[in-house]
Image (tube, rainbow, N blue to C red; front, side, top):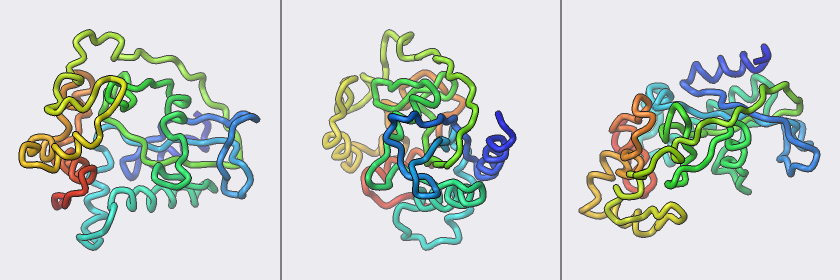
Amino acid sequence: MSDRLADISTALATHGLTLRGGFNFDADDDSPAGPSGAPAKSVLLVGQAGAAPWPHFKRWRKARPADLANPLDTWSREVIGAVGKRFGARAAMPNDQPYLPFQQWAMRAEGLRPSPLGILIHPEYGLWHAYRGALLLDETFTFPPVEKPIHLCDLCASKPCLNACPVGAFSGDTFAYEACIAHVRGPAGESCREGGCLARNACPHGGDYRYPREVQAFHQRSFAGLPRPKT
């Protein structure tokens, strides 16, 4: 890793975030604008492994209004934006419109593939990781070759993730969003709402990085558009 990438990684780590790889755009890529306004030459993926950012986010949130909309996205934008400004990069977020191909970028940067739930599965973290944003730059880097990691789902014959959902929202090919969200919002969905997605929790991999219950409840309630638990 170059000194500049190492410095960016260190700056992100102070917030519990991780530099999740990156790549240089090819000439035929439809790359978004970099900090200069011209097409970016490279992208760095910013994410998390496990719930490492949670303590940093909780401290930040205590100083913000309790009814702040989308607090985790707001925190991510603020933190990643500040790191980007420090290093001359433009921060991009998954919720920016027009939407950017974050999942494709992540697959290209780390060689990951989707699980039957649609979440990219990591050989170490399992399903307990996320991408919080990206840094777009007007410079190129020398990135190490992306080694094709083990795809854990290929080694999993029973696929417990596909049998754990109470409403059968996952088929391996499609996600029944309306059935899922109705269940999470309803009286029968308390275990999913307060303890996290049962399908995701059924995956046997990455247990050391599993999000704590309060983190899972926060995400589930955010997904369902319900009041979030206090942090």
